[in-house]
Image 1 (cartoon, protein in one colour):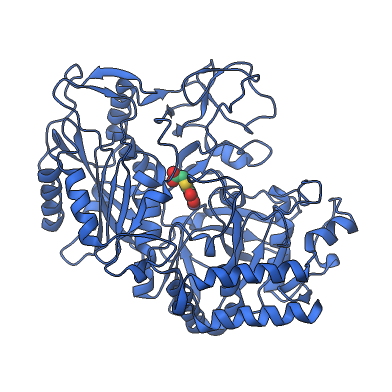
Image 2: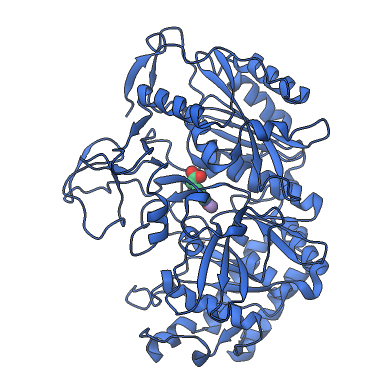
Length: 616
Ligand code: O2Y
Ligand code: MN
């Protein structure tokens, strides 16, 4: 479904081609000139990140039909975008790692030889921006003036990408000024792949059936063609902050991770920081905005999706959130499940593929218990509760500044980052995996991270519900061979030594034999975090089990929660024979990586098997 709108000729020219700012590094100017010569845009704009610029671009997109302004009384300075129905999620099958050697991308990435991919891209990008404005977006990842800071330039022909990048990153003039003659920066090129012939009518969401999301880790470049959606197009996010940054991190001795960051203050006033990796759409934003149900604890948000971690001068692991905004999943975000997110979205938000109310506000499944009587669905069709399809797309999103979150921690943009006390790996598992388990040590924690599996969600194309191994929740995001990444984690652990944070695994999604969730989740997850942090402090006991250390029932604060003995038993049941089947699956997964799997990880598998045989 495409909405024809005013032709380019009918629209007044918004901006003439600008000269590069005089403070732009000559290498950046040369890059922009080169891409302009290839893509042949009608005009070029250097993005400054100002409010006036955001206002001008959103008005332009309103006229083009890309954005609908929401009712300012209900949702000030906010917009709804409806994407092309074929451009609604990350496209993993079209995401490529173009390292010189195939083995350096590894078996879990789609690999193409750089020369071959460059030839393909050269052909696709030739004239790809005809009739469009080419925007030059300078952006910073991480707090300014921090040891964590990295810079990038994204060139795009999508004003939607510019507006979204302005929320998700520190974008504009200050970012461009960060690039001096010796600064390393990531070059990212994006086109929706829909050039306009003279007089041709544009569509509300231009894109192309052919899609390539290509990463060149060795030269730190990203080239994306054909999609304007999320991670495919906002190249600072998954492309840079994870795929390219994971390679930078390997080379420079730090970690770029698919992790939320949460600050917790105990009833005694002690501050902790937790980093937690969950696969896409498994509740990272909800946990990052936890409202503890147990008295005394205070939770504050630092990040909801990506963390960069490095060892500080005192040998401790510190982390920052490299992003400046949240690109969260809308469905399931509601007053009961994540009231903080709902409060965060009061205004200044771009919503994509949610439903529109007759009053000019937004709605999605799970926002409220009661469904509105009448809506316009994400496709622009009339919708009632009797409709057979959801009103909002399952991967519909909100884009909002992190600073707008009412529980954002003061340290969220501290240049030094925060010291990490615990690392958590999670996944969506109906069976086998207990509510929480503590790794025996860092090496065992790396093994747990390497073998995490989860049921697939709507965040990427693929079969929802299908179980897949998603090591460290990085399967779609690791820019190099995943087995080398495990070795890198082992190396970081060796350097941390005694200072290494404890590692845990959690599973909020275990079900009983009737398919009912055993654990209430959301705010009640604070009980698990409480046990984890008391464990870190040596104040909570655990039982040794073959898969790690499990909480004793009376060591977990269950006050006010009805968890029967039977439910507790099912939450923590470790069936050795089923786990031995899991170990066969883990072994088959490792075999895909051949010799590159670290010896210490293979050894962990053997030790797990022995422990399981011991209790069979
Ligand atoms: O990038 C998209 O199009 C959706 S996927 C996404 C968005 C925000 C945060 N995380 C993810 C993810 O897939 O992990
Ligand atoms: Mn994510």
